Length: 369
Image 1 (cartoon, rainbow, N blue to C red):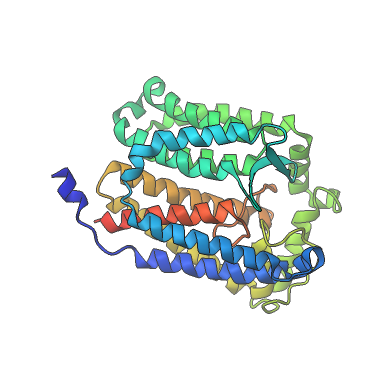
Image 2 (cartoon, helix red, strand yellow):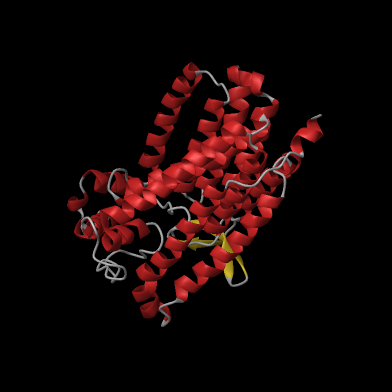
């Protein structure tokens, strides 16, 4: 009966697929528009970042379509192995001379002409493992010692390794996603309240332990206190969003991309989009993400088993949290942290892993009621 139930496959969620491809296309156009000037200056090729984004996006789409054809419960079998491999990669990347340092963080491993970011792989591996754990031991989750501590403890170990790089943004997305998964599995609110207080104290400690994080908090509260230093990025981001107005300055007409906003094709791509396409363009992108969130939750609610439900919730939550943090940063609502905008920002590991994750979500939709 169990096997027969899983053979009932329908068409994938075409709205989710179309939303993904639409956002990916918008991202490709905006990466070229945002990076052409910088790429011409640095690499003497205005299409440098756009061509690489096309390659990463094409690879990601192939992976997405491949994942869509692999039945999602297959990942239960390999959940422990995937998690172990990602833990080993997080340790290897910390070895001097092996891990590549960019932007002050030792977060990349070189693979030929390209590089991978193990922390991005850890996010999806942890979601898959936690979905398996919560589905198998759901009754334990109400127990603080037997359920909550083991699951969160593993997440915090991974978070600790990511913080050694350091990469607070990626670590925060992973932890927040896992907390949501554990919460919806039935964990008690009182336990979360107690852990929340400990987490807040730990977060304050992380900020106090690194001077550059304190500078980011100060620049968030008053960016004009250091307009050429810690407050530079947020000021330039707001200078991009403000003149965009309702309809924008026109595609390709951004001024801030001309060496005012550092590498605008990555974390601050939404600022350039808002400058060129205006409030309506930015609103359209956010609406696409809102619809993507709705389809993801709908798939989770219709999944035929707990593993599928938790896996869909984890993937959807990861995307939404990353969007919220990125938009919050570029609009000055939260302190600056290195988080890309899913499907839009330039990137290799982040883009391909995001499309791979959506491929798994699309497969769950084929089995959803």
